[in-house]
Image 1 (cartoon, rainbow, N blue to C red):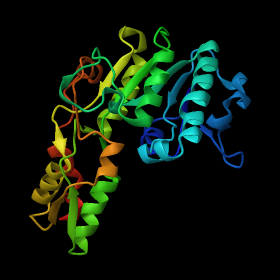
Image 2: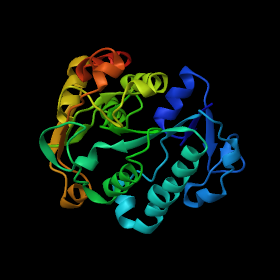
Image 3: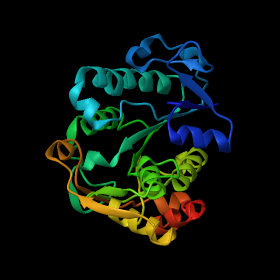
Image 4: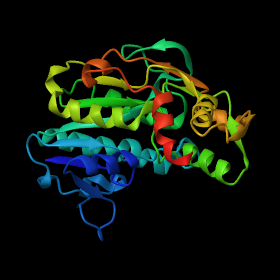
Amino acid sequence: MNLIVGRNGLIAEELSRRSTYSFTSSSRDTDGFFLDLSDSEYFDYRSIEQGANIILLAAVSSPDECKNDFDKAYNVNVTGTRYFIRKAIEKGAKVLFFSSDVVYGNVTESVDEDFPTHPFGEYARMKDEIEKAFESEKNFKVFRLSYVLSKEDKYLKYLRSCMAENKIAEVFHPFRRKIIFIGDVLDAIEAILDRWYEFPNQKFNICGSENISRKDIADYYNEAVNNRLKYTLVEPNEAFWKARPKEINIVSLYLEDLLGRKPTKISEAVKNMAKGDR
């Protein structure tokens, strides 16, 4: 049994195209196992089989929402999530928990999985709290995601629409991450489910090899569309930076081994995704 918690996001959607997964749903009127993480004690835990793989993607993920409606977000991201994970592990399931690179805080030096966490903002502190709650569990592993780039990415869609409408795009800068291509994330998920016990480590930084800014992405895209995109650099306001670090320079000790190759170059991924926009 492969069960995805959080069916509405891009990762869940792309995984379901590759293989057969069951899903939880926060609505009783849709297919799937009903689960409301704000009230997770009422989930039917009898449906979790011994040896099941659970991919836990669901969360209140907006840094602004976590800050502005803290109690609601905490109830989902910590209280409900912690209860669900504990019960799932007790049933003999393996839980792959999706965390974030923001647990490291604003770091310009390279940090790997052994580096201590310094969570930046409420969302990061919630993720870090769940990580620490299950540090001794062999059936609990963590993917700390960097920024995930795909064709459905809001920023790429924004650049595409600005070019099509001959508008000048506003590009936030500086804002750097070790961006990872969606295909690498999916490959890493499938690999860890197949090779879970080959990796004694619990935490994986899921990141690319290069520190990429939004300006870099705009330049890669522009090169692919024959310089038809016009953009200007914009410094984000103070409120934006209160919830987001300017830079997180993570590296992974394990990702290449997990993938069996180096991560996809973002410059090549952007150019390939832009082929239909030329």
